[in-house]
Image (cartoon, rainbow, N blue to C red; front, side, top):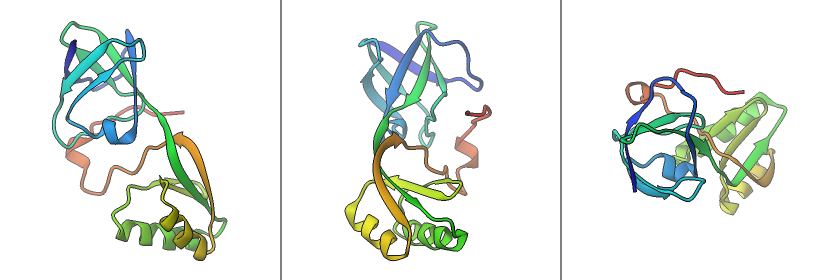
Length: 150
C-alpha cells in the first residue's frame, strides 16, 4: 500500500490519479484505490478538504492528483438572484454543504430538499456532477488552495 502524508501547496505533474467523492475528500484518514487500482492510505491534517486538482505526495515520492468524482446532486436554478439567496439561506440553515454558481446552487441530492426548493420557485434537476461546495467562512486556516480551475 502506498502511504500519503503530504498535501502539496502547488500542483505538480502527477504520476497517478485518485478520484474521490466529496465525502471521501473530507476525510483525514482513508484507504482508497488509485484510478490504476493500486491501494493508497493517507493520514492528512484534520479539517482539510481535498479539492479537484489538489496534489498529494506519497512517501515513495510519487505525486498523486486528486479528482472530484461525479456524484448524485441536485442543481437548483433561478434567474432571480433573490430566489437563489433565499434557497441558499434555507439550505444553509439545514447545514447542507452548498456549491454556488452563476444562477444555480448545488447540494447532495435529497428529494425533501428538492421539494422545499421547488416550492420557493426554483427549477431543480437531479444529475451526476462533480460536487465542490463552499469551504465555509471560517475555513481559512485549513484550506491552502492557491491554483485556479477552468
